[in-house]
Image 1 (cartoon, helix red, strand yellow):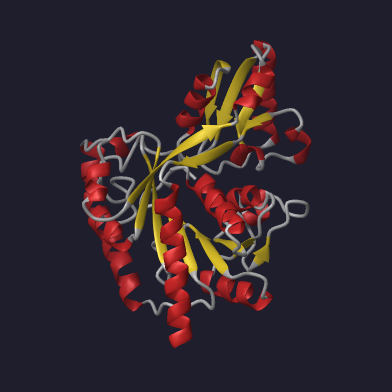
Image 2 (cartoon, rainbow, N blue to C red):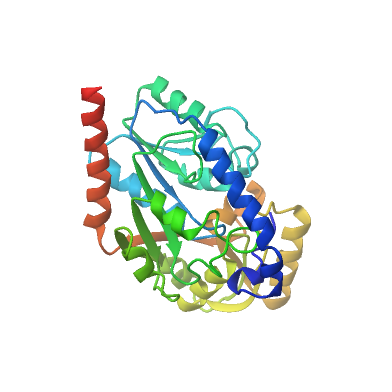
Amino acid sequence: MIKTPKFWNNSGVISTLLLPLSGLWSLAGAIRSVFAQPSRAELPVICIGNLTVGGTGKTPVVAYIYDWCVAAGYAPVILSRGYGGSVAKPLWVDPQLHDSSICGDEPLMLADGRDVLVSRDRVAGARTISARGLHDLILMDDGLQNPFLKKDLKIGVFDGTVGIGNGRVMPAGPLRTTLRQGLADLDLALINGEDETGLKPTILHRLPLVQATLRPDRAVIDGLGDVPLLAFAGIGRPERFFVTVRQSGGNLVKWLAFADHHAYSQHDLTKLQEDAGRLGAQLITTQKDWVRLPTEWRERISFLPVTVEVEDEAGLTEAITAAIITWRRATDNG
């Protein structure tokens, strides 16, 4: 996957020249939705996704919601497309048996203590979950624009730092659909980090909003002391990770960005190790990058876990509870 284009943050010449293609993209999405025949799962479906391409901190939000659901007495399961993985049929993710080349990096990271099923066909995945008979709630990781599986609650996650970029649809900008249509399709929005682009008023005019903050595990940085750090990341917004390392007190001396979901080769890792050696530095990366590393490299490279802290937890959890209750009533009456 390519790196996030810089022109997605402005409305310059390149972005403007691509606007006709954006129109075609939007038209294709509209046609897909019109002719799709959505299926109803046998369990309530809560979808957590993005309106934009690129990192928004969605994965920690999915983990947060899953953990809250367990604490609240539900038996959730995460349904993911498994982007970057090779498996085509539904697969229950086992971190002891699978690697990111099979199931994708995000499902592998989420599967640490959580039930995760990957399936390119979300409808087939929902049926596999129902057939297992162990769960009462599906958390659909991404897929807001997937029209084939009905959702009972749709949550859109936004990065407060970059917002919606230049506000244009792909490929002229980062939006997967127009902002008007995207917000109209959501039930709830969540902004990760301070709203630096002024997006909050636009959202609040249309739907409820909760504020969240990504919290790095400072114990990892503290444990490294003053050791020089060479940070690398292949995520949607790698620069955000580098800033986090520095703000957490890390002695960051060099940083390298790779494309989102980059598959690290032996050459990549050897080069990184050589660079770190010359600087007397320790390699550090994100947890999502770390799970993509070959097993023999993981002991040599540190990673910085990140969790999400939701300021208005009640606003989020009440929406989840209401969606489940509504689904149960509809099922009982159906």
